[in-house]
Structures are given as structure tokens and as C-alpha cells.
Image 1 (cartoon, rainbow, N blue to C red):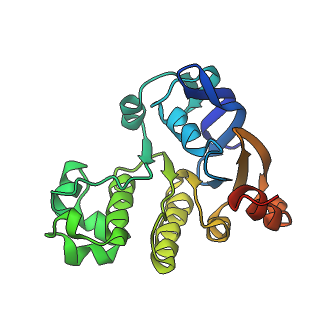
Image 2 (image 1 turned 180 degrees about the vertical axis):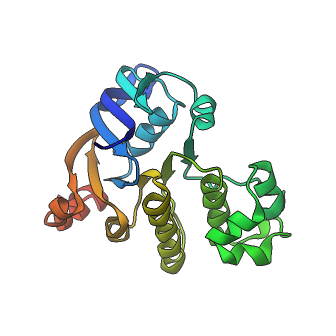
Image 3 (image 1 turned 45 degrees about the vertical axis):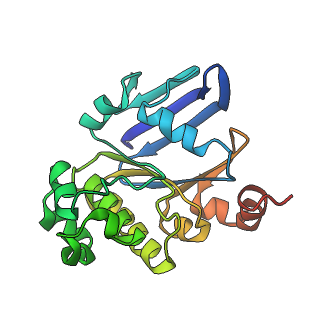
Length: 231
């Protein structure tokens, strides 16, 4: 029996009374990486914000750890939710070490995930490279032992080598620690290389879903229609 950590059932969500996401069904189980793909404006970030508790559903429900919830994000975080936004989740005028201390994550644990952070622990986060900042963001999130991690565009603006390292760390957290991961990602093929299942969104609805193996045959269509704006 699978252990579903977070789930949307018939979910409609948006801003004010305007629904951006409609009739959405998805779930993430313990120990799996699920990729959520789609063009800009498809509703991916709105979906994550609603799952995280930052937005309230207009219709349907979110279930977290097996129970329906309308709790705010901070309450879900206390129960094991980790959320990485598109903007790097670091305080730029604090050192890397102080960023970790603020999140109650030891430097040793963070450097175990990302050895490259060791040489910048005393550096202001704002003076770190984009890759180092994102390593810090992910180390802060994983260092708090989340049950479920929602990650929005983890690789945005980063070099392929850094992206590969970040995604490898996410995959290891799922495999070795049972973290469930919902990953919004622009690097489609790299995301599929670590994912177990895939959802593709178009105009606020899921249009393709399945295991990576099931979706692999439609990859060209997925990239053309949903990620590059093609027909």
C-alpha cells in the first residue's frame, strides 16, 4: 500500500474568484519524485501555492498526510511540508552559516548534501553565486527532514552541471529518506531522468499523466505543445 503524502481532489484554485487551475486531481506518495510540467501560465505555481496553503481552494480539496486541510502554510510546514519558491529562499544579507542556523539546520548536514557550501559558510548569501544560493535553499529545506517537498523551478537560471547536482540530491532524498517530491521544472529531460511519474498541465488542467515510461513516448509532443508554445 502506498503512503500518499499530499493530494488534490477536484481542485480549482486561483486569485480572487478567478480560477487558474480547474478540476485538478494529483497526488504524491512517499519516496517518489513527481514532475509537474507545462508552459508558462499553465497553472503550475498556482497549484503549488494551493497545495502549500498559501492559496485557498475555490472548489475541491487538498489532503495533507491523509487528512483534508485548509491550514495555512506555516502550519503545514510544522507538520513536514517543505516549499521552495521560484525566488531563492535565502536571506541575502546574512551569511550562509547564519541562514542555516536560522532554519535550525546544522552546517555539517548542509555540507553533507552540498560540499561546495563549506567554502562559503562565512560569506554573505547575497555574494554567493546563483548555484550556491540554490544549494543553500535546498539544503535548508532538506535539512529540516520534510515529509513532502514542493519545488518550483529549482533550476531557473543555473548551469546544467549545477542543475544535475540539485536534481540528484532531490532524487536521493526521495529514495533514501522517503521524501515525496513535487517538482516544477523547465529542464524537461533532466526532470524526467529522476522522476517516477509526470503530470502535464495546459491552461489550468492536467492533460497528460502517467509514469515516466508511459509519458516518454509523448515527450516530443509534451515539449512542443506545453513547453515551447508549439502546436
